[in-house]
Amino acid sequence: MTSLDKPTEDTQADDARAVTEAALFEAFGGVRGMVETVLPGLLFVTIFTINKDLHWSAIAALAVSLLLVVVRLVMRDTVKHAFSGVFGVAFGVVFAMMTGNAKDFYLPGMLYTLGLALAYIVTTLCGVPLLGLILGPVFKENLSWRTRNPGRKKAYAKASWAWGLILLAKCAILFPLYWWANTAQLGWVLVALKIPPFLLAVWLTWVFLAKAPAPIDVFAEMEAEEQAEKERAAAAAAAAGAEASGGRHRREA
Image (tube, rainbow, N blue to C red; front, side, top):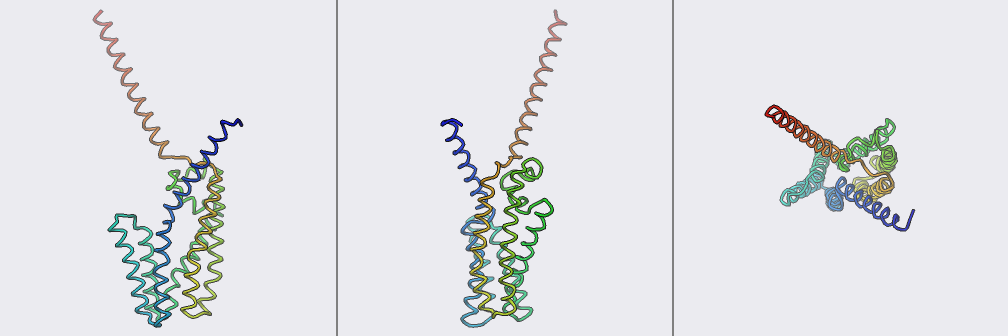
């Protein structure tokens, strides 16, 4: 490696890290997505801690979730993260209202977390890590990492293991509390565990993917193939025209 090569390689590595950061930010919603995830549950447990009123706590949590969606719609921003929050809160509200147990507001989300943890682990064991399925379209590589980019497949597998194990550890804390703790205690622990495990999993994902080979842009490949096909067709048409013109000249001669 010469002294001229190293800056180029460093620049490429920096570009790869920047692309990875941007993709993770888009996929997981960034700071705003985290706020939208935490705020409804925080409002529920705060109100319930103060007045022990399930109905007002549930209404407030659902109302703030809907408000977050409206804000995104007004700003013409993507609503997928806010909508997922609304559905999660709505399931929790319905479940708690049906059973009359305020702790059941948290149960659907806990079951979802457990299911997601198992999905990360099972898909990785099956050779199709879930994180690759999630991030493949974001990186414009789709499923090319499965057969054409083994280094990225390995990185996706490591990251999926990280997500699965972190979420399982979170469940190992929350489910015993669901049985033993009261609603306020469970709620505050759940709020406290919303962001740190998530940030740890995202950071590990960034570490694994930043060191992986660059993604194969299958969209760019398809565009290049289409362009090449157009050029071949144009060249064939030009050749056919030239041949026809030459034939006419020969007949005239």
